[in-house]
Length: 288
Length: 340
Image (cartoon, rainbow over all chains, first blue to last red; front, top):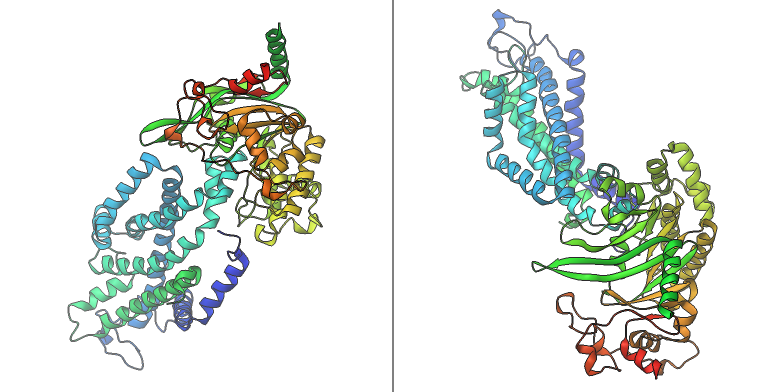
């Protein structure tokens, strides 16, 4: 931080400038807004009851009546997909929020306290990072059993380590800055210094990564639901819908393909948004 | 007889002292070994008095202030000996929680860099009020009212409209005043000022110094003023301690020190200081540099650079002696000369 460094206000203005000029960021934002609105307004826009069975019309291909076809029980695929968005987004959002809160707390603590505590905690988290996300999630979900709560807990645990790493690095930089030293000289305790003087100066880094990790959480949710460790039926999630259609994917392709596209669109939108936010927050990446 | 008087004077001085540093020794670990950055340092700071510590970079002046407030890094630094007496307690013996209660409350500190010493994400009114809320248990509303009074006191123009401004909306001199307001928030008895004007340009520096002097009088504070600038010392201090390589080499009142610099190092510093009433061509740099912490000479630390060096200087480390002119000086050679 030299005296020539841009001020916080101009930094914010420039970040917004970069964000708004990036066309992909708008595509991401529009797409995610569309999906979230559809999930919120599910009862209004879903053409059918997602649980209503119509045995006569089972496994119908896409038609005027059922735009995206029907499943084995004759349930409307489009309606089920719209309702599934609620669960998938909810699981992704809440799991990421939990992981962000716990991970950032651990990261700030490790960065600020340092020493053996830091070494021990980061070593522990490195062990967690060594497992692929899906495998770790699968182990935890299998241990806890299949339910909405357990799914969220399992996904959250897999994402604690990356958030801790994201929060730790800027904490180490910030704690050496003069204003943190000044805060210590004013007699403020470590909790206050971490919460009031360090956290607000690095929260943007963490939140930006949050949107990228929410995409990952939705992917993990779909994968766990696909192998039957997700939300129990009859509630639908995108992953469980893909699973239902997977055995006969060549005959009844619409059962798997449309939920897959929904996952693809959501993950893509969150990644575009996350990349754009990261670029906007970090002037060094802007030239690329 | 003389010694008895001197001893009595010392006792009286220690009695009146607000902050009394006795025999402080602060060490850093370098390459697995502890090396003293400050050694055998004693200072008595009285109420309503400004004591300046002068010295070049690496002489241990900042370390002294940081030691007094126990703000040294927890790993690789330690107070190896000595006591810091304040309010009847030895600060070096307090728990971290008790120490937090002293910092920013009874003893406050201001730092060198006004540009980076304020939290960029917090309005300055809140930053000043924060210490009042923490130490005095005040409500935020009344603490902010006091913050406004403090901003007025350090002469921030239109203070009421600036309470919710962020640090980046202030100039360097203004930020230093905000820092001073923060330090004064809990009406400290002792203010440690670590080169508070070094980063400011000369006109702003003069304003801030004048203001510090006024505030010292108004609050009856004891001020420990750390600087490498002898011009600033002449302007603000009542007494001066000159530090070299971690120890005091000369201590005297400001008028005496400038009139009769006694230690060869002090004399050399004054010859190296530019003055308007003298030709700049007459400036004499001091040859050599401060010895490294890991390579201190056995005798007098200044001997390798000293124009008065004698064989005895490198043999034994000199004590701080009381001279007939009232100075405390760490140089037996000059004392012998004065006696003659």
